[in-house]
Length: 457
Image (cartoon, rainbow, N blue to C red; front, side, top):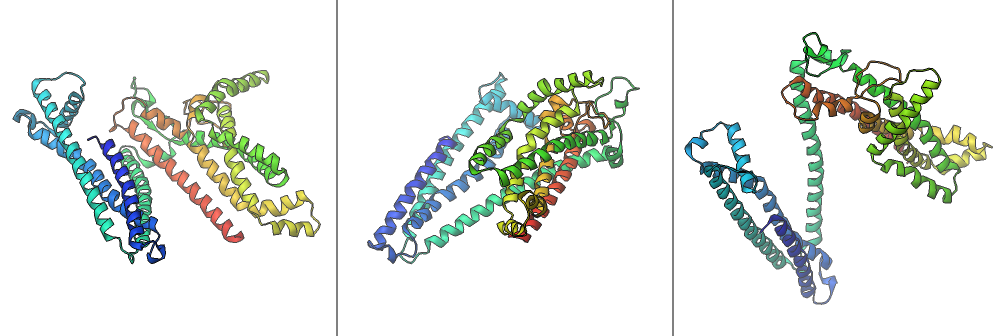
């Protein structure tokens, strides 16, 4: 039995157990639900949980160990000369056996025999798992159905099980984040064992490519990340210079001036910008905005690069407008109406009320939303790749090509790479710095928003 088939069968058995558990509760109640401690549906959920959860735990446990156990059994059945291979060669040998078992490639008689053994073990494993999973599900359902009594606290048991699942889901998210951070941290430590932290953070040359001649900068590696930080800051600043005023003004219009009918039309249209894939923005920046800026610059006598920070920043700012607008609109609407009424009672006009009462009251939330938008701008990659170029230039001129941290991470990890060279490990160091910066911005934004909520809720 395939594992997907077993999973659907367990879902069907759980649904059937729910029905049987509820019918059992009706029967015990004798026609009066008031005789039961919990509603009949809770007895159904109680039976379904006992049917499905233990079987799913066994399925997950089996999936975690199946590959290791089968690999060891296959290796133990190989000829002695193959069993004595180093661990890395055994890993390659196992991959070859799996490929042959899957019907790919050709191999020697020993490898083909091992592939047949591997295939038989997988079939036995699926059969045993199917029998065990269905047996445990039926036994769990029978046990739960037998436990149903009038005084049984089925609701408490179900709510406790749901609480455990919610806590487990939260732990999965937290542990996944911790795992990602630790993997980046460990690889970054390997990088800093080869390149000093001072050179990385304060160096002015970035050339991690493999050198062809001895006199090239890259012959000894140049890992100064200042040009990348400067390029990221330049493009993000241009983007925020576009997104913040347009997004904030549109939020003020939608919250304070627009009628309900206009608001119902404009706001969804504005938020469509957030749903457009970033690669489409990249096309727009590379094929439309960048040539337009270059032509305008030529008419004014300016030298504008075909790929410039200005073009990428402008399009990135358009992409971020919905973030600023939507968050600002929410915080402006959260300002209590009593503050507006108080200002009107003192004789203030609508514009004076907005400038001197509403915006100052909503400012902490607006600033928090802007900081979240900055994090979005710093992490954007596709637009920069297509419109700003890959040159690590240390410049403040927005008409020249620059690059960003995320773009360089992509560049360093594209293609076949050696994960023990400083060139590849530099991507993890850049990722660690990017993670720290965005984490700091998000923490600052959450602090500001929390302070705002404490003041006006």
